[in-house]
Amino acid sequence: MMNAISLALATPMLSGGGGAGDPDRYMFFATRNRMPSGSLVTAASGTNYVCSKIVVNTPQYKTRTFRFHLSGFASTEGGNSPQETVVTGTVGTPGNAVVADAMFIRVAGVFYQCTFAGLNTVTVADQTNGAWTDELTIPDVAPESEIEIWLFYHTAVGEKVWPVYRIQKHRGERVWGAGDLATLLAFKDTPLADSTAALDTNYATVTQPQYYGPDFMVAKGDWDGRPIVLGLVDSIGEARQQFSAAADARGNLGWLRRWLDTDGGIGRIAHLLIGMPGAGSVRELTGTGAAIATRRWTILDEITAFNNNKKPFTVIVNQMGQNDTAATYTQFFNTNYRSLVTRLRARYPGVKIVALPPLGRTVSARTVTLTSVGTSSRQRSPRASTGSLPARRCRSPALRRRSITAMWWSRSPGRTVLPIILPDRRHRRRPAQSPPTTFISGPPTRASRPTTPGRRTARCLGQMAAARRYPGEDLGLLRRRDRYLCGLGLR
Image 1 (cartoon, rainbow, N blue to C red):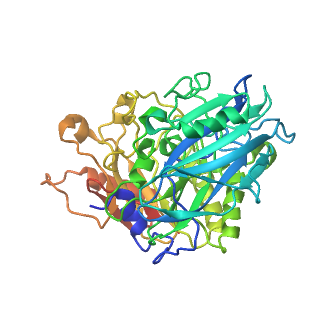
Image 2: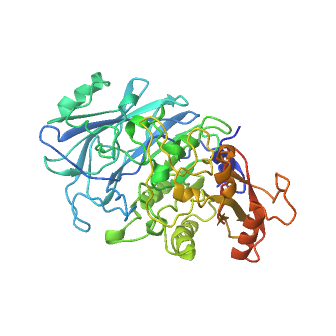
Image 3: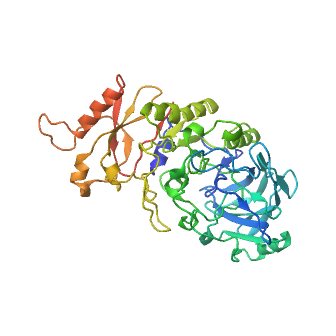
């Protein structure tokens, strides 16, 4: 059975093209990679030379030509995210640079060195877009393989380095530190040697240090035309609720990465998630100076420039919305949420946007209980294992009093999912019969149970509320089906 997001992305009306594939087109390909964000790391005496080794996994087709990117900035997390203001100096006044002494990828036990404009080293300056590796072609990498990425870098003691990756030790990832490069290069002969203890701290927690590494990664290969996703996410999609040790065998954290990488239906969908914890729509893809959030998008433009004017993705998935809370619905939906959609339409005309409708809320924070390491966190989001939404009987009593009774979609041009929130007394009365609930588009359907004459069903109440809120709209009910999620394109 096709996984949930595959259904939406594969629908011709919603996808951004792809056709039969193009072996000469750079596309996103790697699991695990992420954008720089978080807290700067300070170089300590004796470990100011660092080697970070991360492991990414490849798609279900062969790849052979690769390029990787190192950034000269990171994004903040929290209330101002995704503004790219985590810098080694101060905004507008660059701080120390970071020297990449060498970079290798290791495939099937063989090392291949990456170069930067023909050189083995590159200096990445603070508050710059960074540097790309040159095109690297190697023997075909088999589908669903592991690629190790070894980055050797240094700064002076006491200088700062931008944060990217928390090492996943159970997948063979490591971080080593030393006072010189030669000592680190020796680890190429013992690739599973333990990480340096001084650098390997607070494992599997939010305070685990994040070490420098490549963020954007693209590859050419036998791409078969399946969708390739650019994902706009906040912490719910990027997986802040899970850390390092909770990653699956392919390095995926959180529900969205696992969901996209599900081996079923049309198969694993390669993706790059461009957001980070705290990201809000109103702050994304806009701003300058101390509010800049456009550098990552400029790097995407660089890919298009060396990719024969072709984008490295075919469709955009928008998971944003949880951090767009506002006092009124109009401010939340139009001023905040839809402002980003408008900017995306202008920047990528013709590329479809698949919306994962955010669950509404009126407060900026909600206390939740996280599960143990290695399992999914209890989020109000689709389950990682099946792609189905959690049962409508919410764990939070406050949320349980306001459940989603129905969601409606508009057939009118330029509209998308229209959530209608109503009290759901049935599920409070019979919680054991509350099934996992997801939605696919479809016409209004007859009530599933006999009703008392004159009694208004939940569906009837929802339809009336929808009609009052959206007068004149041609509305269709989103029906419940396990293991599917509605993803409607914003046009």
